[in-house]
Amino acid sequence: MDKLVIRGGQPLSGAIRVSGAKNAALPAMAACLLTAEPVQLSNIPDVRDIQTTRALLETMGVETEGSGGRHQIQLRAQAITHAQADYELVKTMRASTLVLGPLLARTGQARVSLPGGCAIGARPIDLHLRGLERLGAELRQEHGYVVAEARRLQGNSYSFDRVTVTGTEDVLMAAVLAKGETVLSNCAREPEVVDLAALLTRMGARIEGAGTSTIQVQGVDQLGGASHRIIADRIEAGTFIMAALITGGALEVTHCQPEHLGGLIERLEEAGARFRIEASSIGVAAGGRLGAVDIATAEYPGFATDLQAQYMALMTQAVGTAAITETIFENRFMHALELNRMGASIRIEGRRAVVRGRSALAGAAVQASDLRASASLVLAALAAEGETIIDRIYHLDRGYEKLEEKLRGAGAAVRRIARLIPRTAGASQPRTAGA
Image (cartoon, rainbow, N blue to C red):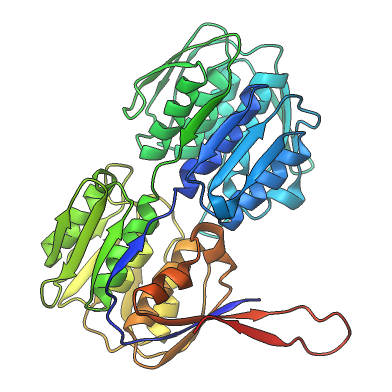
């Protein structure tokens, strides 16, 4: 199992380029199931979740071309031969449920394993399922799978009980091929939802209201192919911004979309960070010592839950005490225990974490519990004295493209230790990557 080794104390400088958004690319890939014609996607990040989704689609009969290294892929679902998402492929990622709506709309049937992913609390797909039922689907659960059937989905109205990004995307993809009008209320407004709607519209869907809480869909009989560029990853951009600040450095974060980061930038400006914002880049530097600022996570355009762990790491180096309230997931503070092992002073009170700042962080052996927790430990390690070894970084590889290479390019002392599986009995031989 790979590890990252980071020696802290090096201020970051220079520029880091942001990759395409994993959370926008995954539903866009699932959308290829809605048409027999090719869907061409660019700015695809080369991360593990993309590779897993590609393998999943190929088991369904989707023809794929292109490579993650070139950040382009073409998907063609000319014939869906296997309308099932098998457990072995989807057990590591929550986004596997995104194939449920398109499979059902295109073929009239779907069998999808209940999802896996990060251990950050219950994320039931009941909101997806209720929406599909409102469109006429018959659903049942058997042996860990959701089985859905429908002759043709019928447009209807549906209000999500809670705001859900993947639920909004899943039901939206089903609705574009449903007969008649569908009105979805209490929808997620995240940029990733807007990006999916833009792709579907290029494919011939009739959608209004994406980016608002109400989306209207006029169903069509079929969709065609399209070309689409995936938006920049706002979570990766936010992670690098906070990496610069926690090290007392200055960075130019390029190829990003600053308008998607308003909730974070406002809080960081209040803490004392300085920004230079242009059309597709953000220059960031600490204007002296940062001050502690309270935050509460919220659906977009509020403070993103996917940036909460990184912000907690940053607040360990701020002057004062910050209260961090997690409103989206009930079990997303597991990184706090690992940060405390490095010398942080964090107290958990239910869904609230109280962080006392200006802690003297010291390198330690730590392990990641989920994707964004991994990023928080990387940030803490960059600021810590001595060497930190982060285990279970396969979480990082699910959502961050070549993170250690990007950080090294900005002056960080970080390397990867890759554990090789031995071909014969005996201890595995580690190898190192990077410097």
